[in-house]
Image (cartoon, rainbow, N blue to C red; front, side, top):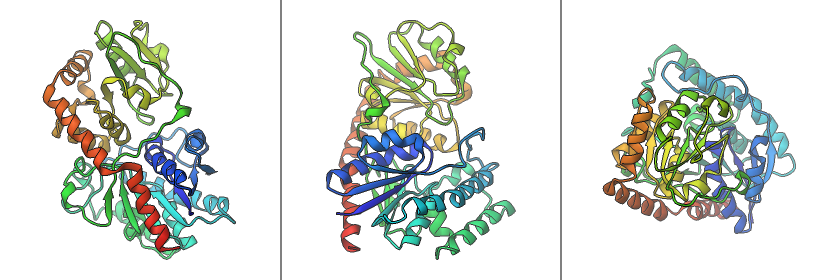
Length: 391
């Protein structure tokens, strides 16, 4: 049996998509060790994996990146700062216990690719979001100037870092040359999905239970509406106040997850059918939800679609705009601009998505696509084939 290192960035949306893969590998007799921050210790323990913790440069007062053309260079430099800070910690943490394979988050945890190169082991790139090629890419939203001096500076810095480990900037920033590419999105949801061939494997979401998230029991007599802006872009007391106003006399039981930046007291008095929490066990709530008012982060989107829950998407940054547009394009929910997220608009949107029969059928079809993608077992099959080939 093999020892697999899973290297993930600080964001919860980059950790959760891998947990089902870890649980499946452990169930098959493999050993899994996470390189992750201590904030994710409980989730790592939930699936039976070990943790090699690292200290991050990405926490604290720095605002989360919007990934617009204006701040793309800042965000990329921050990710490269993280590479140089985290890599020596991970190499030291695995000293004497080298893994047989590395699965790393391809979007941010570039240090995982470097660690695999230093160890001389196979590497699997994991994509928790949309991928790009010449037919579609996120540049449609970001509009990056490929010859901007700041971008050229980022690429030169990435090249210098990668070269020290025998790699190229493309290996680092785009996961080029990885032994396998796992996409935690079903092909049917990916823009231009039919144009992506090998080595991409669309396994879809790899969900597993997260007991450390806590318990939640559904109410009786009312349909449930979950409201969350995720774990990074939720400093929006105005939005949550609009939700309270929208659903104050509505027929639904509303669960608000406001995050750690909004004081629930800022929302004022809430009716008994509106719960307000810092966080909730999202998978447990979605199992009983009739609708999800969401920032349209890909992790949350995949979890909702796995349970055929319609989405009212209120994107908070560029990548989420692409997700929200795809949700609307495929008839899996509706998209609302953050500036238009008034109480009246939110209430109308939830009423619409919970009563639209065509939307419900689209959700059932997407749920079938997710199931047929294979999830964690399909991802584990890819990893086991690589372990056997390099054994």
